Amino acid sequence: MAANGTYTLRAGDIAVEVEHKRVRRINLRVRADGSAHLSVPWHCSLAEAQRFLDEHSTWLHAHVARRTERAAEPDDGLVPLWGRLVPLPAGTTPEELWRAELAARLPEVAARMEAALGVRAAGWQLRVMKTRWGSCTPRTGRIRVNARLAAYPPTCLDYVVTHELCHLLEPSHNARFHELLARAFPEEAAARALLRRPAREACERQEGGAVTA
Image 1 (tube, rainbow, N blue to C red):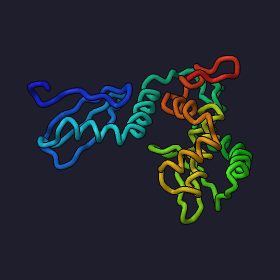
Image 2: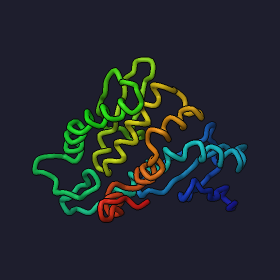
Image 3: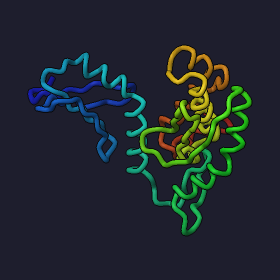
Image 4: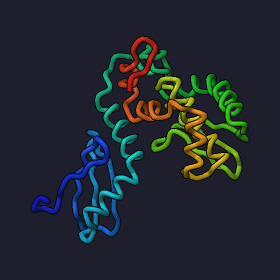
Protein backbone atom coordinates (compact mmCIF):
# COMPACT_ATOMS: atom_id res chain seq x y z
CA MET A 1 0.00 0.00 0.00
CA ALA A 2 1.27 3.47 -0.85
CA ALA A 3 1.79 6.11 1.80
CA ASN A 4 -1.37 7.92 0.75
CA GLY A 5 -3.50 4.83 1.38
CA THR A 6 -3.79 3.71 -2.24
CA TYR A 7 -3.00 0.36 -3.83
CA THR A 8 -3.97 -1.64 -6.90
CA LEU A 9 -6.27 -4.65 -7.18
CA ARG A 10 -7.41 -6.52 -10.27
CA ALA A 11 -10.82 -7.45 -11.58
CA GLY A 12 -9.94 -9.96 -14.29
CA ASP A 13 -7.67 -8.10 -16.71
CA ILE A 14 -8.56 -4.65 -15.35
CA ALA A 15 -6.28 -2.88 -12.87
CA VAL A 16 -8.25 -0.89 -10.30
CA GLU A 17 -6.78 1.89 -8.19
CA VAL A 18 -8.07 1.49 -4.63
CA GLU A 19 -8.02 4.49 -2.31
CA HIS A 20 -8.90 4.61 1.38
CA LYS A 21 -10.91 7.75 2.05
CA ARG A 22 -13.27 9.27 4.56
CA VAL A 23 -16.35 7.70 2.96
CA ARG A 24 -19.15 5.59 4.40
CA ARG A 25 -19.59 3.22 1.48
CA ILE A 26 -17.50 1.53 -1.19
CA ASN A 27 -17.74 3.42 -4.48
CA LEU A 28 -16.55 2.12 -7.84
CA ARG A 29 -16.29 4.43 -10.85
CA VAL A 30 -14.76 4.44 -14.30
CA ARG A 31 -13.06 7.64 -15.43
CA ALA A 32 -13.43 9.19 -18.87
CA ASP A 33 -10.11 7.66 -19.98
CA GLY A 34 -11.28 4.14 -19.06
CA SER A 35 -9.28 3.80 -15.83
CA ALA A 36 -11.05 2.36 -12.79
CA HIS A 37 -11.05 3.78 -9.27
CA LEU A 38 -12.42 2.30 -6.05
CA SER A 39 -12.99 4.46 -2.96
CA VAL A 40 -13.27 2.49 0.27
CA PRO A 41 -13.73 3.41 3.96
CA TRP A 42 -10.61 3.35 6.13
CA HIS A 43 -11.80 0.23 7.94
CA CYS A 44 -12.33 -1.73 4.70
CA SER A 45 -9.90 -4.64 4.34
CA LEU A 46 -8.13 -5.71 1.15
CA ALA A 47 -10.24 -8.88 1.10
CA GLU A 48 -13.48 -6.87 1.31
CA ALA A 49 -12.37 -4.56 -1.49
CA GLN A 50 -11.45 -7.53 -3.70
CA ARG A 51 -14.78 -9.23 -2.99
CA PHE A 52 -16.63 -6.06 -4.02
CA LEU A 53 -14.67 -5.94 -7.29
CA ASP A 54 -15.36 -9.61 -8.00
CA GLU A 55 -19.09 -9.11 -7.42
CA HIS A 56 -19.17 -6.10 -9.78
CA SER A 57 -16.80 -7.46 -12.43
CA THR A 58 -19.43 -7.61 -15.20
CA TRP A 59 -20.49 -4.00 -14.57
CA LEU A 60 -16.87 -2.86 -14.49
CA HIS A 61 -15.86 -4.59 -17.74
CA ALA A 62 -18.88 -3.15 -19.56
CA HIS A 63 -18.15 0.40 -18.40
CA VAL A 64 -14.43 0.24 -19.10
CA ALA A 65 -15.09 -1.12 -22.59
CA ARG A 66 -17.60 1.65 -23.28
CA ARG A 67 -15.30 4.41 -22.00
CA THR A 68 -12.34 3.03 -23.92
CA GLU A 69 -14.40 2.71 -27.07
CA ARG A 70 -15.54 6.31 -26.89
CA ALA A 71 -12.03 7.63 -26.20
CA ALA A 72 -10.44 5.70 -29.06
CA GLU A 73 -13.25 5.83 -31.61
CA PRO A 74 -11.87 7.26 -34.86
CA ASP A 75 -13.78 9.92 -36.75
CA ASP A 76 -13.95 7.95 -40.01
CA GLY A 77 -17.70 8.00 -40.55
CA LEU A 78 -17.96 4.25 -39.88
CA VAL A 79 -19.96 2.54 -37.15
CA PRO A 80 -20.02 -1.09 -36.02
CA LEU A 81 -23.13 -2.94 -37.17
CA TRP A 82 -23.66 -6.67 -36.66
CA GLY A 83 -19.91 -7.19 -36.41
CA ARG A 84 -18.98 -5.13 -39.47
CA LEU A 85 -17.91 -1.52 -39.91
CA VAL A 86 -20.36 0.31 -42.17
CA PRO A 87 -20.87 3.94 -43.23
CA LEU A 88 -23.26 5.82 -40.96
CA PRO A 89 -26.24 7.01 -43.04
CA ALA A 90 -26.46 10.79 -43.32
CA GLY A 91 -28.69 12.39 -40.72
CA THR A 92 -28.70 9.26 -38.53
CA THR A 93 -27.06 8.74 -35.15
CA PRO A 94 -25.47 5.38 -34.28
CA GLU A 95 -28.17 4.81 -31.65
CA GLU A 96 -30.93 5.39 -34.21
CA LEU A 97 -29.29 2.99 -36.63
CA TRP A 98 -28.83 0.30 -33.99
CA ARG A 99 -32.40 0.66 -32.74
CA ALA A 100 -33.84 0.31 -36.25
CA GLU A 101 -31.65 -2.69 -37.06
CA LEU A 102 -32.45 -4.44 -33.81
CA ALA A 103 -36.18 -3.83 -34.23
CA ALA A 104 -35.99 -5.58 -37.59
CA ARG A 105 -33.94 -8.58 -36.39
CA LEU A 106 -35.31 -9.17 -32.88
CA PRO A 107 -38.65 -10.83 -33.82
CA GLU A 108 -36.91 -13.67 -35.69
CA VAL A 109 -34.34 -14.23 -32.93
CA ALA A 110 -36.97 -14.10 -30.19
CA ALA A 111 -39.24 -16.59 -31.99
CA ARG A 112 -36.34 -18.98 -32.61
CA MET A 113 -35.11 -18.92 -29.01
CA GLU A 114 -38.63 -19.09 -27.55
CA ALA A 115 -39.22 -22.26 -29.56
CA ALA A 116 -35.92 -23.74 -28.39
CA LEU A 117 -36.75 -23.11 -24.71
CA GLY A 118 -40.49 -23.78 -24.89
CA VAL A 119 -41.31 -20.42 -23.31
CA ARG A 120 -42.77 -17.15 -24.59
CA ALA A 121 -42.16 -13.59 -23.44
CA ALA A 122 -45.18 -11.36 -22.84
CA GLY A 123 -43.47 -8.46 -24.57
CA TRP A 124 -40.16 -7.07 -25.84
CA GLN A 125 -38.76 -3.56 -25.49
CA LEU A 126 -35.71 -1.91 -27.05
CA ARG A 127 -33.69 0.46 -24.90
CA VAL A 128 -30.26 2.07 -24.91
CA MET A 129 -29.01 0.91 -21.51
CA LYS A 130 -25.75 1.92 -19.82
CA THR A 131 -25.07 -1.05 -17.56
CA ARG A 132 -26.98 -4.04 -18.97
CA TRP A 133 -27.32 -5.83 -22.27
CA GLY A 134 -30.76 -7.05 -21.30
CA SER A 135 -33.18 -7.41 -18.41
CA CYS A 136 -36.21 -9.50 -17.60
CA THR A 137 -39.16 -9.16 -15.22
CA PRO A 138 -40.28 -12.77 -14.65
CA ARG A 139 -43.47 -11.63 -12.87
CA THR A 140 -44.77 -9.86 -15.98
CA GLY A 141 -42.89 -11.84 -18.61
CA ARG A 142 -41.52 -8.66 -20.21
CA ILE A 143 -37.97 -8.47 -21.55
CA ARG A 144 -35.84 -5.43 -22.42
CA VAL A 145 -32.92 -5.60 -24.85
CA ASN A 146 -30.13 -3.06 -25.28
CA ALA A 147 -30.23 -1.53 -28.77
CA ARG A 148 -26.41 -1.34 -28.72
CA LEU A 149 -26.34 -5.09 -29.33
CA ALA A 150 -26.78 -4.29 -33.02
CA ALA A 151 -23.17 -3.05 -33.00
CA TYR A 152 -21.94 -6.57 -32.17
CA PRO A 153 -21.90 -9.85 -34.12
CA PRO A 154 -25.38 -11.48 -34.30
CA THR A 155 -24.37 -14.25 -31.89
CA CYS A 156 -24.37 -11.65 -29.09
CA LEU A 157 -28.04 -10.85 -29.65
CA ASP A 158 -28.84 -14.58 -29.70
CA TYR A 159 -27.03 -14.96 -26.38
CA VAL A 160 -28.74 -12.04 -24.61
CA VAL A 161 -32.21 -13.08 -25.84
CA THR A 162 -31.60 -16.64 -24.65
CA HIS A 163 -30.23 -15.45 -21.31
CA GLU A 164 -33.29 -13.31 -20.60
CA LEU A 165 -35.74 -16.00 -21.73
CA CYS A 166 -34.09 -18.42 -19.32
CA HIS A 167 -35.09 -16.06 -16.52
CA LEU A 168 -38.73 -16.77 -17.33
CA LEU A 169 -37.99 -20.38 -16.37
CA GLU A 170 -35.58 -19.60 -13.52
CA PRO A 171 -35.48 -16.03 -12.10
CA SER A 172 -32.14 -16.37 -10.28
CA HIS A 173 -28.65 -17.13 -11.56
CA ASN A 174 -28.49 -20.49 -9.82
CA ALA A 175 -27.25 -23.84 -11.13
CA ARG A 176 -30.55 -24.60 -12.85
CA PHE A 177 -30.43 -21.30 -14.73
CA HIS A 178 -26.91 -21.96 -16.01
CA GLU A 179 -27.87 -25.48 -17.06
CA LEU A 180 -30.83 -24.14 -19.05
CA LEU A 181 -28.66 -21.49 -20.69
CA ALA A 182 -25.83 -23.89 -21.54
CA ARG A 183 -28.23 -26.33 -23.22
CA ALA A 184 -30.01 -23.65 -25.23
CA PHE A 185 -26.90 -21.64 -26.14
CA PRO A 186 -23.61 -23.58 -25.89
CA GLU A 187 -21.64 -20.63 -27.35
CA GLU A 188 -22.37 -18.39 -24.36
CA ALA A 189 -18.70 -18.02 -23.29
CA ALA A 190 -17.65 -16.74 -26.71
CA ALA A 191 -20.56 -14.30 -26.85
CA ARG A 192 -19.81 -12.96 -23.36
CA ALA A 193 -16.16 -12.47 -24.35
CA LEU A 194 -17.22 -10.37 -27.34
CA LEU A 195 -19.52 -8.22 -25.22
CA ARG A 196 -16.66 -7.40 -22.86
CA ARG A 197 -14.81 -5.74 -25.76
CA PRO A 198 -15.50 -2.43 -27.49
CA ALA A 199 -17.77 -2.98 -30.50
CA ARG A 200 -15.08 -1.99 -33.00
CA GLU A 201 -12.67 -4.52 -31.58
CA ALA A 202 -15.33 -7.22 -31.78
CA CYS A 203 -15.64 -6.36 -35.47
CA GLU A 204 -11.90 -6.56 -36.03
CA ARG A 205 -11.61 -10.00 -34.43
CA GLN A 206 -13.94 -11.65 -36.94
CA GLU A 207 -12.05 -13.69 -39.49
CA GLY A 208 -13.54 -15.57 -42.42
CA GLY A 209 -17.03 -15.55 -40.96
CA ALA A 210 -15.85 -17.03 -37.64
CA VAL A 211 -15.44 -15.21 -34.36
CA THR A 212 -12.18 -15.56 -32.43
CA ALA A 213 -12.30 -14.95 -28.71
